[in-house]
Length: 173
Image 1 (spheres, helix red, strand yellow):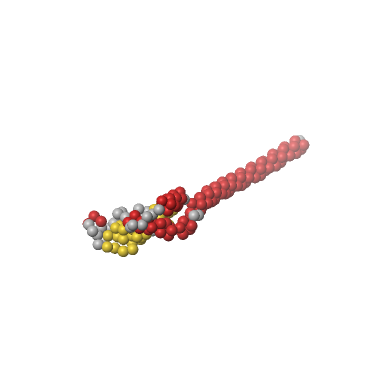
Image 2: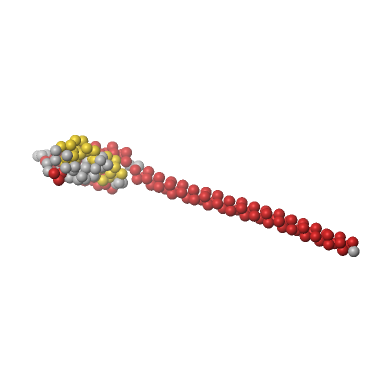
């Protein structure tokens, strides 16, 4: 009978060992699951951060390319102003604006427009300090002209919808 007791006791011991091993393995499994979830979360955050970085880089590169010519075009604006004054002088006076010069003027304008340069229309519109720089104010000839731009001294320009030079204007008060 002592053999039976010993066998029963050995079986209980083996069962207890297996239970302890199962508990330990279950605990390890839970730990590994938690680590896996943490790693997945870190991976997803890192992936999202990298994706945002790529999008931001592409946007910055696109913005840089859009405004890369801004400095050069800004330097050419006085030449465009001189062309405009010469053309206006020829139209108002006895001078002739030759056909060749007219062609150069038109080509120069079309190249700048193709690069994104747009001339602001200022004369006759409501004065807006975000678009115009008031040089002076004069009395309004009529009540409906009050607060409007009477004359444009220097044209304003936008490059790809970004103001690169404000229009210098005379405002009616």
